Image 1 (spheres, rainbow over the protein chains, first blue to last red):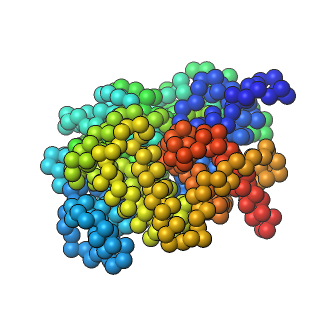
Image 2: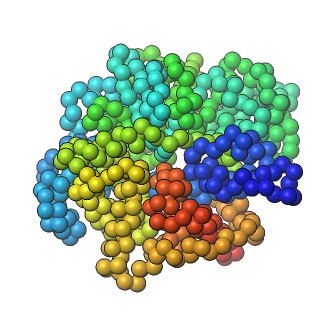
Image 3: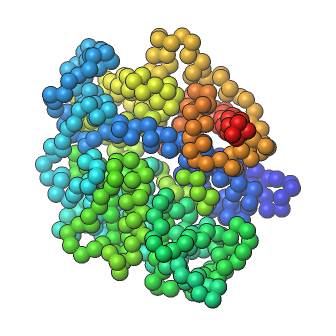
Length: 323
Length: 203
């Protein structure tokens, strides 16, 4: 962190902290504390975050149709192999097997080749996702967290490993009032009475993109005077609004890390099935509770990140009583 | 998402040590000719590599060829992976070399695309009027402006924010010091601000 003689709250975050934060990598507690109270650094962080979001948005959009389908043993297909680079690759490869692997890989990426999972016994814990044939889902109770990998137990008693990467959306929701802390940016949805908002849903951090339950007008701001009974929402204009919370308040943390998930939490994971039976997750949501029945039925409009984001948001913003 | 309600303080993701370990195992299996492992490796990293290459070259067909060549190099050379870097930075570095070779071979005018000296040490300016353009910008504007950046700037932004690599790993891929990565990132953001500012003035 850099010292800034004009600011008594120095040192400010240095570029490495800002970039790490924007890249979604951990930053130190001291840097985080400073960031929570320093408007200068918040502005800088916002700028870098916007740049990073732009890059990720581009990256997510570019391979949207290039997202590989289910990993599978390469198989011959009857798809036509286009001339040009594909044929050249086959020649260059010199190895039919290697060429086929790559052809399938890139073919999957371009939608030219469709393959199907072939690993016996790897599918039973997963169910299809309506709207995107490339995705499967798994849900169950969180048993273990090993770094970036989670182990969940499904309703049928099967243990499933869910792997996450830096690009996996990890969120959590429930009665997480402890996550509402002073300085946190929040979005509050609820009913207003006598100048007090009775919070139905509080989203901590950057909210999901689209979901806003009917009847609620979201109000955003920064948390002040947090307690078990509520907090004061300070809006960007400086207006202070009392917010009451209760055990019925649903707290949503759209951007969490696997390490924040609690053992025993109900987990919903969306991603790709691996040959070893693991689920490589695109999104993981720890939710209030799983609905009764074998599986939480999920549908997405398409395979785009925004559709997945929207689906996870809908699941996360559904109170347990309504699920 | 252009939401002003951005949680700037949240460290949202953590690095995946397990996946690093898994990648080493995958590469061992690939070196033994395991096609399933190759397909899995492709699915784990292909999308990120493709996005990064596409960001630099700007042409989908060419990016696909380069990724294919890079994956072919992985298939052939997995046994040479020594674990000194993450598998992702390793394959991205391979793809970067493939990009350079391809552009050198077919598009001489594009040699500067991955010229390490290009803008590497351009000093970044502090917040000024151009930064204000970034403050006002919507995500869609930023996305569009990134597409107009110089390839070297797109490359470093993609590596820093789109590939899941740490700054030292980005430096390793680009074969430049971390300090140069930082100055290049700052220069990229300055250029982005400039583009946004120009677009704003033209509205």
